[in-house]
Image (tube, rainbow, N blue to C red; front, side):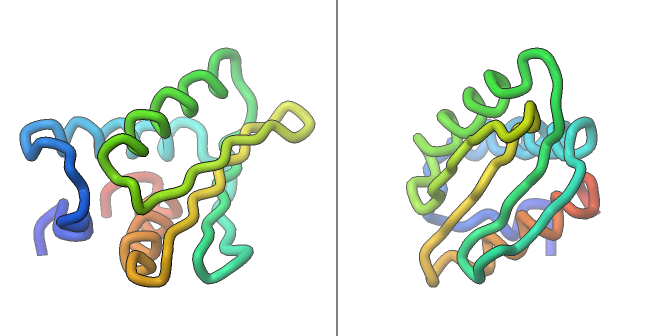
Length: 110
């Protein structure tokens, strides 16, 4: 299995851009992630903590991700100053959500 095998074929991001996007997610996980939870089988919640410009950074990333991976539903909320990112999928994409949650919990690539 290669580093990007978990990315589904449904992703329409051009292949040459894929490593850069994954690196953006990895950087976000490594720099900001405080906690990963699985409140529902089809949803992961990332607690990204607080920081100047963090909500905008996350919003920009999820907007771009939504344009190429329409199977994701992202919800960004702020609770007591902390940015929370909920990522939901349909049943067919649970393996992708599982891989993303594992990657986040590991702080980036394994």
